[in-house]
Length: 437
Image (cartoon, rainbow, N blue to C red):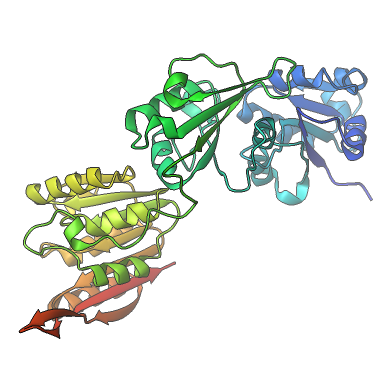
């Protein structure tokens, strides 16, 4: 039986090739590499044996197109000889570990995991931490490496602007860079936005790891601004000294009196806690907070999920000012504030994964209808203080195909009357949750 066509990714850069990688290279019909990796591969003893089969392609889309064609075409047809039915075997050289922010994910997606074999080397991140003798099991690792073509950069979970907020959450961050998102640019972004004293942040730039001229630069964040570092490189930012913290989140449980608000018009602490629980915030995506008021739900959600993009929509100009005041006070960088009335203000913003409706201005049905059409699947939560809003919310969600459940939150708080502690009941709030897909 004819063997299946195969694509093998071999990571290079740091260690000699293993037995399996040598076998695959020896049998490969074509070996693909970028110009940088082809240069790196010249240091390997196997290079001379296979150099006539190396093809340099620098663009990912062109590489994928070539592989797709080559896997379907016998080798002798490509070389202009008489055709036969022998399948081609292709090797793609990758940097380090192809599955660690590398091309492995894309290749498995394009050609199927069952058709791709991956033989990794060490990752550059792993080597970088080894060079500075620092454990990395407690590091938060991100990539801002989007490729050389700015117009075709792939979407990344985190951007440069997110790094200061991530430093508020983690003591140790490692960043895979590129020419645009360089160590100096990372340092500039941190210096312009950080709340942590610069003396508490140490920046390590590991340049040209695996090359004969590799170097590790260590200094303050401010000192790295404007420095031209050699490529490729990896950045590690470490918080040290007083104020160092673990990996935990920003903390849950903002108090009403910590947030600027008007005449008690704020989602009460207990209700906010249940509402956010019902939303089941994702690590990333988009949350709409409609009728955001003082922004208490939006700010709490943004602090809990720094990778989530939170959009607070509020029509009242004074309330918008309060949201922005609270945003600055709590240094929430993943919160966007939009002044406008729903549903009209929702038409042009990015589709949501979660929707919270704290106020509707009498347009609840239209808001639910528009939001449901903009979201493919997810959760919508409505806070209703009246039976009329409760009934309207249930009907609107069910009409739009959501599975609905309702919780009633009744809160009593203690107060002192004549020197005695008594419990005073607050108005109950109905929390309507709709889930779809």
